[in-house]
Image 1 (cartoon, helix red, strand yellow):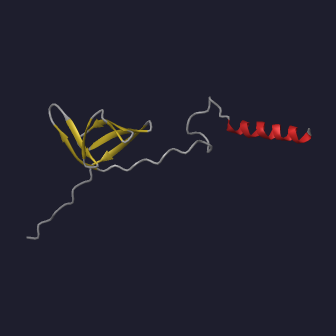
Image 2 (cartoon, one colour):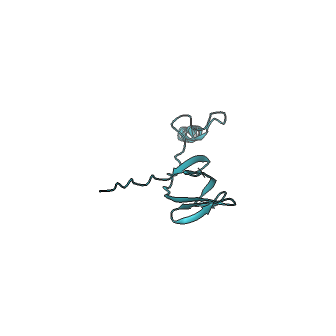
Image 3 (cartoon, helix red, strand yellow):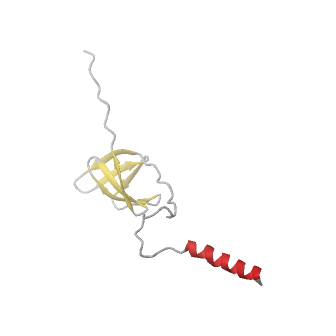
Length: 104
């Protein structure tokens, strides 16, 4: 009987730690679940015309609003793109071209 009581108390105590406060802000405290690591994307180029905007990401042309690899392309700017990844905003920037100096 004593063993059964100890087992029930241990089970209840282990479940009490699993409960989370619904009023606690997200990202508060160290016991939050780990999110999947963000995938790295490469922004190669941006094309902006009068009627469309296209960004080449990982070698594929993408348009605003398009979803790929679990990420949504929110906005294309002349020098960067905004992505939404796992509910968080991310920015990919174009790498500046290397400066070439004339040897003459």
